Amino acid sequence: MRIRNVIILSLAVFLLGLSPVAGAESYQFPSIHAGIVLPDDVYQTVLTPDNLQAHEEFIKSKGGDAIAWAADFSAKGILLQAYDTQNDRVLVITALKDVDAESIFDINEHPSQVRTKYRLSHGASGAYTILGYKYDSVSWRNFSGIGRFLQLRYTYRLGNEVIHRGYQRRTVRNGYTITVDMQVYGRQLSGRDNTALNKVFDTFTFSQILPMPPLPITLDETATVPVEISKPSFTMKGKTKPEASLRAVLMSFSSSNTQVFETKANKSGNYTLPIELPGEDVYVMTLTVSVPGFEDLNRSYNILYQQGLLRAQIISAPGAELTADVFTLAGQTPESGVRATLYVNGAQSSMKVPKSGSFSFNIDTSAEGSYDIRLVLSKKGLQDRVFQYTAARLLSPEAREELLRKNALNPTYEDLVANPDSYDDKMLRLVGTLVEKSGSTDTWVLHLALNKTENGFSDIVILTADTDPGLSVNAQVCAYGKMSGMYLTQDEQGNEVKLPQINLSLLTQP
Image 1: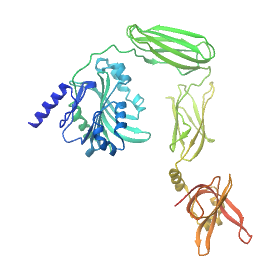
Image 2 (image 1 turned 90 degrees about the vertical axis):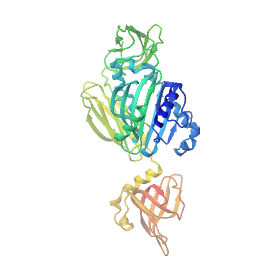
Image 3 (image 1 turned 90 degrees about the horizontal axis):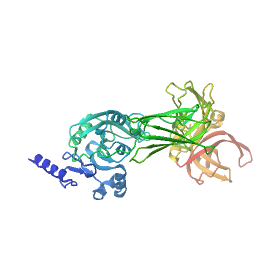
Image 4 (image 1 turned 30 degrees about the horizontal axis):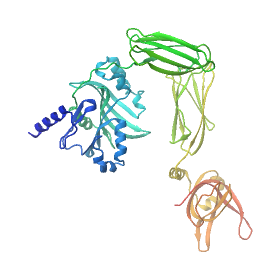
């Protein structure tokens, strides 16, 4: 009887288009004309855009606040976020008016070619990879009563860190991209997670299916404008609205001359537009697609035409600051028989670019400092292509100390004095007392005593630095630095004394 009452209550709420009713598990989403029913006693906390303030303590426990989360819900189109803490799951339902929603509106009203293209957008080279999603399972299923949804399994990364894994159901309907997402945290996925998603998704219903409006002009380019070209002509191809007019205006950077190229799509929407460049130059081209009764679609392109040019693009280039221990420099060239040579601070490595045209180099950037990176692409008969970058790796004090600690040696003072050459230019770690400190604007000299005796200090090491390390005399310190020979000084009696000298890299308190 209880189950029957819940069903009747859920149906009534759904038909009336109301918000969640206290004590019920039914949730309605008027913007997409849809609703779901959550299973009993599974989700301990259920958030919606309307109840975030009421759950502020819970949000604070997650490190946020209600105002910031409200903005986040709005930006991501979150309609519901439900927490199954016992199983490390979060159910998230979103609806976005994104580019796909505007151009497709209802995936069920389009031919198989459109559905195939949408499915492939979730592949290895699709748009979702930019957002951090890697899908390892993507397939369409036509569900009774609610139409086609993609069934997806994925891993979501932020940088190199896995944030969560999950299963999704996604469609485009009623002018929104709708996603039902079961996110799993801190563990691998299992079949039980997919089952948990299905228990919710099986209750998903649409109360209304909106009719297809006239969709805006779209342009699916199968052959687009080359960014770089070594020949004076190319041909644009693709598909748009049937019998649309296409007009390309080409403008040269070196002169004010313009050229116009025009064509018309056939009854199926297919078009071909040949372009002829008047000479070597840098160009800007604007393409306008026009259909009576619709707003024009405009696209702009930049073109570099140079005879003998080795065409290439860098897909992953270093910025001014390097943040990871390894940076991957990656590129692509449509030319065959290309050799790529990389120089990093003078060190050279080389490879023959494979037939796919894709190439990459992994650069060790674990050491702090400046990196001069030079990539040369060469092919017989074409001009070398050179890409040059300067980047720096800066470590936090904690990361710097950890790196130094891993690489540093810990010799005895006796060994250091007896065999200074064997430690020359090697990273050392020495612990002791800072007993003397003097300096000027560009040179600081510090005396580090490794041992304390009844009469004072012994086993003195000289530390040199460009700036004041900051710690005061009599402080217990841990010094990291490279051995740089022996330092000549005099003792209290005026006798010449040689002390080990260390060029200081880091001075901390142990």
